[in-house]
Image 1: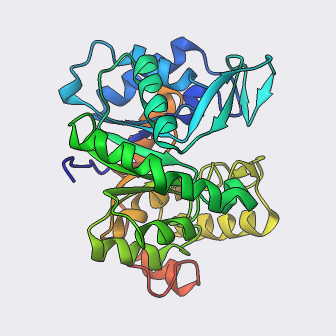
Image 2: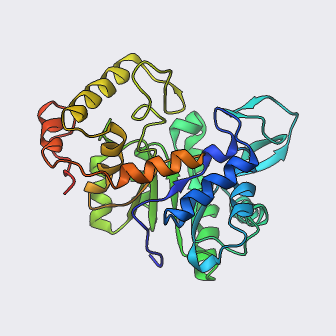
Length: 325
């Protein structure tokens, strides 16, 4: 892969008004706080606010030399005009667009050009096919994957060969599609959201495979949509929905053991995924300056090494999962 991932980046779904409105001013302030803190990797997508996240990110970075940045966006959805709605797919107060899935050669090419226009850039570093798999597409999953393999993947390869991107991959929330695609094509990177975290390690076999193949993994959603950040009594999300009671209880157990070692649970959540050799970057979603500053502080938190064996002894970390150094 012709790009070196940093250990930390900023996911920009929140800049698209995920769950709550965020002002342009607050969006700029969040990105400015990230830049002050040394963050240079930002991930976005057309879905996030139906173009709003990309436009806000591009505007906030307009005075920063492109060579100093690492940016990823996604393909697989095209934006089409629609009636205004107060909430659309979890995003509030967004522009009047809807998404249409298109993983064909022309669809991926068009999506990339539209993203560049919204970002105000001539290229991005990493291009990811977004939300392939049964979780998103159900009975249509096989057809969508076939469209990607027959056309969209080749479009991404040609963009990389032409030097218009540095790396290609997928951005998903499930492991099965990752395994399926790795059986058929070469990927530089996988952005896997929420499936290898302090809360759950079911993706461990996939990560082991990626380590063997040299596929870089970006650990998205290390807080599991806020479940590993919010206090247990708060209304929290998991996989973009209300968190189920059993996972809230698991989060309470994690929090309790972390407190025994004077460690904030979110700090442990950020530090756990990169303990695996395949995980090169952890990518929380952040949408306010104070969130960015807090996340950077958690990232530098000194964590007693005894915490990790204690979590494993409590059955909260899989026996085969590597522990952070």
